[in-house]
Image 1: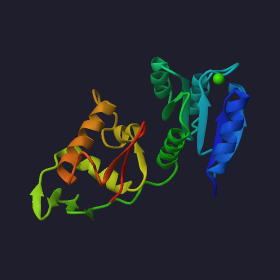
Image 2 (image 1 turned 30 degrees about the vertical axis):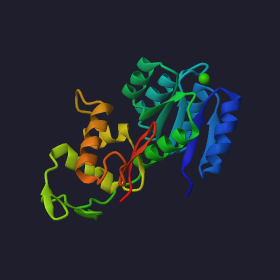
Image 3 (image 1 turned 180 degrees about the vertical axis):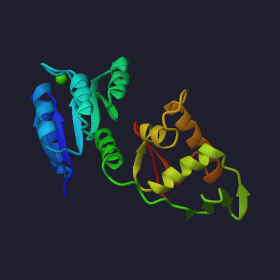
Length: 228
Ligand code: CA
């Protein structure tokens, strides 16, 4: 079954473009052009994800988001904010949005974030992986032992957890937000910079050439993809 997407956006041009684009990517797309319409539709029908503009006539995106969560709506919410409105992004996440995207955005980034969002919501967790081999690496997550070419290497706590997350989501794009949630559980003082630093450490230890990684790829503007 196609993932059901609700687009709440008041710019007719953008509604048209995004609807076509998402339909072309295999999503079933409905739209609403103001906050109240979006809220009504999201309450009446069931969606996997909601693309929610912040600046909307009548009721803004934040109010819609807060109201949806208050009503127990569990759809993934991706807020669309104007460039540089940082306090807005934070406000959106506090009100229960899952992610945000700054306008104007690149289509690949929208698609990658939407894909990551849909993976996080609704679908059951991936099966736990206890042991994994790729290249010269052999990891046993249960005994917490990691070997490279039969030599034991040390991966302290979060590095091992991060590797496990990447392994369990291999071949998919994982955003920094997803890693912050899945590995660090939004621990205080942890930022997306922390994610990048840990990725660099993993590459240093696991990749033959950390400057040209073969397994842990950067997905520009979004996050990473582990391709064993
Ligand atoms: Ca708008």
